[in-house]
Image (tube, rainbow, N blue to C red; front, side, top):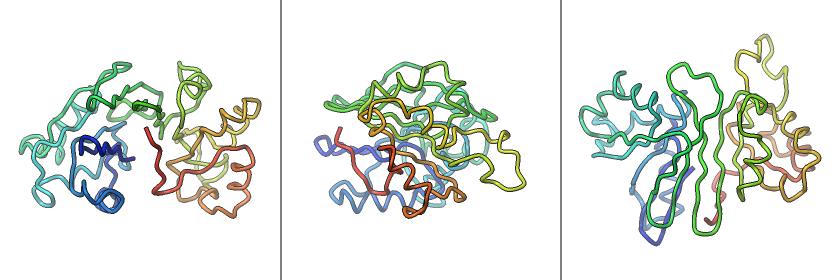
Amino acid sequence: LGIVDPSSGQRWFIECSPSFPRQARRLDEAYPKLAGKLDGILLTHAHIGHYAGLIHLGREVMGSKGVPVHAMPRMEKFLRTQGPWSQLVGLKNIQLSPMRDGRAFALNKRLRVTPFLVPHRDEFSETVGFRIEGPNQEILWLPDIDKWEKWKTPFEKALKDVDVAYLDGTFFANGELPGRDMSKIPHPFIAETIRRLKDQPAAMRAKVRFIHLNHTNPAHNPQSTAAKQIRATGMRVAEQGERVNL
């Protein structure tokens, strides 16, 4: 996810995936006047798809200087003490900026972010989602969570308080990974989210955009039964390049 403020000429990235160079180019193409700008990166946790792109900020590639990387305490310690990430800190390619659960912080005068802890497989760091607030709208970013029932915050309340919600849609249903125990890699199946929200108002369901789809997820194909079932509820799979005006 990219956050762009054309008024201030700033932009930030939510997550830094292994595809960071390609994603940065896409954002350059979307906002050519801000091409190459990098005012900060906000990380949810230490799983490969969410932080491994930081390596591109090092001296072998971009050789960036003091890019703010917003991280929770365990994530911050992990980056500071474990190579090769610690080299980014030592060479001042990145500057670690601490976040705290439930504590909002300002990106600038118009934008602020609140991280919130969620239950997940926290081998190397805690896991958070983000509420991103602009002058007019608020977004929920929650790409990874074990199950909705394990979260101390009622899922429906979190959804009610925002305008758009980008949610964990890793797997569509149980049994999607033949020969593997899917309880070892828990995520809320899209089918579970559909069932949970089926009696909610249509306006509530329309906020949902599923993200973080595994390559096995049939909803990747817009013509699949799974994708059609999602659209029939008023929810949908997020599309690359879509924009939300904050």
